[in-house]
Amino acid sequence: MGTIRVNRVKNTLKSIKEKGAFYIFVGNFANKFVTLCGSIFVVRLLTKEEYGTLSYLENLYSYVYIFAGLGLAAALLRYIVIADSLEKRKGYYYYVLKQQTLYNLLIIVIVAVFNVFYNHPEEYLNASWLFALFLLDIPFSDVVNSNLSTERSMFANKRYAFLALITVVISVLFRVLGSFLGGIVGNIIFRIGADILCAGILSGIVIKSYFKGRVKEALTKAERKEINRYSFQNMMANGFWILYLATDMFLLGRLTEDATVLADYKVAILIANNVIIISNAIAVFAGPYFIRNEMDHTWVMRNYKKVIIVNAILLGGLVLLLIIFARPLIWLLYGEAYMNVVPLMRLFLIAAFLNGSFRAMNSSLLAIMGQAKINMVISCIGFCVQVVGCLIVIPRFGVIGLAVENIGMYILLSLVFTGAFIYKYGRKVRKLS
Image 1 (cartoon, helix red, strand yellow):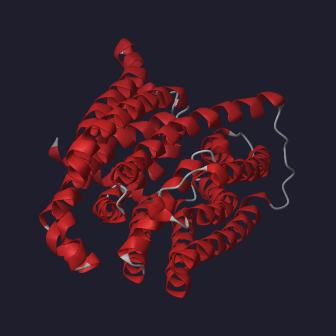
Image 2 (tube, helix red, strand yellow):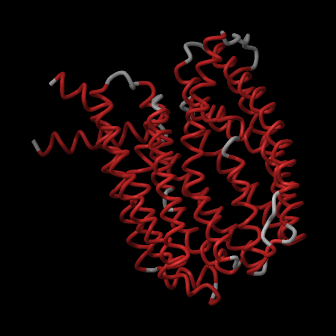
């Protein structure tokens, strides 16, 4: 019996390796490592006040980016997988690129007008025109995401990992160079330039690799309606999650009006946010396979258990190491000025484990398997509860209270998302058995 189990494990690992899982994991780790290194250089090139202002601008941008292309970039992953021909896949690809660009131009105009009348805090005097400049990045960043989604949907795991890494390297190098040459303004301008370059490169590679010489099969009215509905629901679900993250920083900035507090928060949570790399890598690899087998609930539940267990073990090990070595890590990466954030970072690491192990994985699988509506409803309720929690704890307990509130919210969301997935896909399995 023991020999049979060992052989099963060996066969499973061999199958996963052959499908390109190794490249996905290595690529994601490399992406996060490059991004982390880039952020360290940016922190050291800017003053603490400048980095706080940049964090404020990035936070505002994240609110707007929720609506980028009305979610069509993420929808490509699902609909290219389920399309029955390359011609139909080309139809989806070109439809998304055209529609998302039109939507994004409209979003830029609307938000730019709103920005004129929005009263930014006095702490960020130059925020208005810098934010308007920042908006120009939306269309190009969205095209980059569409092309990477296409690579994933084609099960081209090696190519996806390589292109994603190249994109991150270009983006980080441009941001560091921009910060060195022109501070915050240079950071934003070079960031836009990097996404323009990457959008052109990736579009050319995807078209040449999959669609060159193919006749595009136009989408029917019903197909356009379906992808638009799914995109909107998925966008709202992702939007509530982005709001969940962005609202922490937004309310912290508004209720404290201290750029140094924002800088401390950003440094403390940066490493914690990056540990979700493991969950993202697993979701990136497993997602298309779950789409392909979504009607086979027995297959789904069997592999769901494997994904959750492996994800929790790997993520838990990494988080434990980071908690133990938090103090020397902060000193090495950010210097003496940020040593005060060590306890805060440890709390955020606990929250990150709960988020990545259960909330994020269940949410990703539900969304990618067409359950965007369930995802959207749970995320909306979670966001509303989180806002109330932030308004209560930040004025009384500051940023430490915010970290503890995060832990409580992730426990709640983990239970709800896990329950929703098991109810949706485990019910029929139990009935069959």
